Image 1 (tube, rainbow, N blue to C red):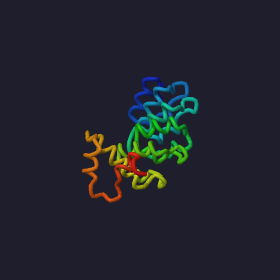
Image 2: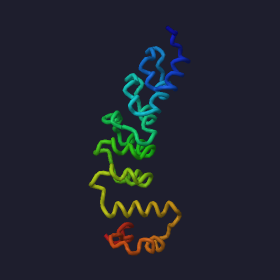
Image 3: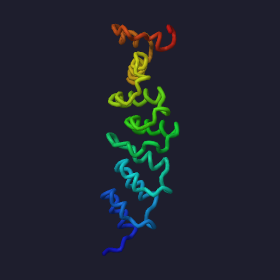
Image 4: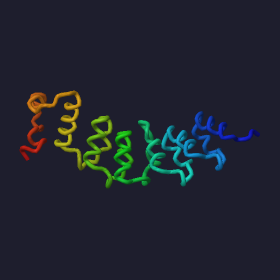
Length: 168
């Protein structure tokens, strides 16, 4: 039997986040918990309730392709959801529908097109797609409307004037 020291516990958690489960309560710190949750959302369940906060949840969602089910129903403020999606677009899949807005979806899809599957149907329309395309075009440095119109020529459904509010 080895005495569990702060250092030994820290090394164990760095090596395997599951080790947090065996750390004595008096040695569990905010920093140690952060070291565990950066390995994935599933380690949130090992964190003592008094240490769970926005920082902990944001650290947990920092990686792509995670199981976000541990986040459901937790920290569901609009502010948190916005930060979560900015940090990891795939967080969109675990955000309650009432906290999802169009801008959040646009930001997520522009950051990673694979997030499209998690965009609520109410936003999936031609105008939304056009806004994504326009943002992407602007991100590569094409700013003027004439250049955008030339690029979008032939796309019957795309109306630059409607997008910028000139023809609705």
